Each structure stands twice: as structure tokens, then as C-alpha cells.
Amino acid sequence: MMVKILLLFGIAVGIYAIFNNIGGVFSAFSVKDPTLMSVRLLQSLLPVVAGGVIVYVSAMNLYDIIRKK
Image (tube, rainbow, N blue to C red; front, side, top):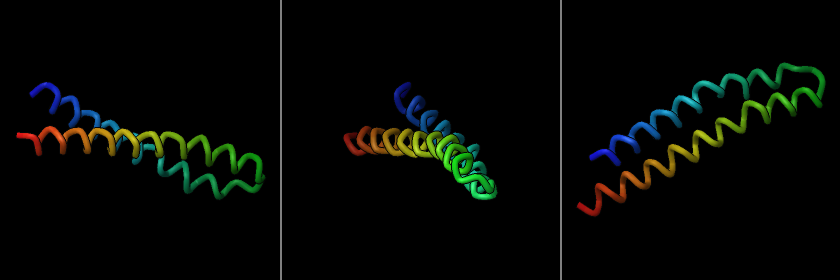
């Protein structure tokens, strides 16, 4: 039961990371300097990708645990 709660918490944290940083991805395109634009894009895109990986891994592990029962 505790593992399921932790996996659900991982999914919530991943979704929070995605939605908290997705605005920075879109606002990075408003910068005129291409170097600053690429840096701001990477700065905002890396947490979004990490949140997506966290959601994927947590969801797959939760699915495997539920499917085995």
C-alpha cells in the first residue's frame, strides 16, 4: 500500500514539474537574442522532460503492481 502511495505522489510531482515549467518553454521564444533564447529554452525544457520521465516511470510501475494482483 505504501508503494502505491509513493508512486501516486511521484505522478503528482511529475505533473507539477511539467505544468510549473511549461510556461517558460513558450516564453523563451519571445527573447530576441538567439543565445539567450536557447539557454532559457533548455532551462525550462529540462524540468519538463524530467517531469515527463517521472510520470512515465511512476505510472508504469503502478500499472505493473496493479496488474499483478
